[in-house]
Image 1 (tube, helix red, strand yellow):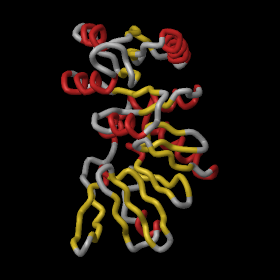
Image 2: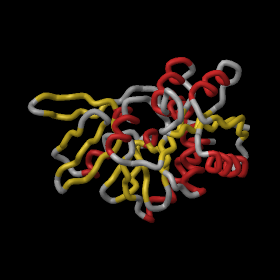
Image 3: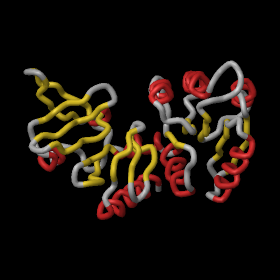
Length: 235
């Protein structure tokens, strides 16, 4: 049974979250509301996942606490927040994390986000270890972009946008032709205009997938295949 630690300063929300996670057969080790108690606990026991509120009471907020945890223990962290404004998103983007869940959330969104966050490392191990690159011509230069760095691709008429965390490229090829150059173990079409890197999906449902805090539409005909692929990677 996977073990989860909750770091949330809203007591009622934390207890409700605990009940939902137990329904999903996760073992909730404990609930903390601040960085000090969390770090003391981690000296004794390490969970498989920490669900972390972005805004915490005390000297360290959730983002700062996550940075400390990643440096010391490298435990997967799923952020939980009621805010989606730019300052919060920019702050979150400066630290390594393994998922993002916006309050209020439903049961299915919680379920998919937690499963994806816990198994992120296993995803990487099961993915083809051979490093593959997409060759992109950028401003007269040929730039090999690692598939692992690509978040998603978006159709733009006769062009295709290739979006990475650091930069967006424009390729003079239609999405269908570009997709043929990518590993089918890493990328999946979720909409006629979007192909995503499965490893970067933080959460999803039948209508949308969250990739690096960006909501991408999921078309009904592609949802079943996406769900099956995620489940197969979890097994």
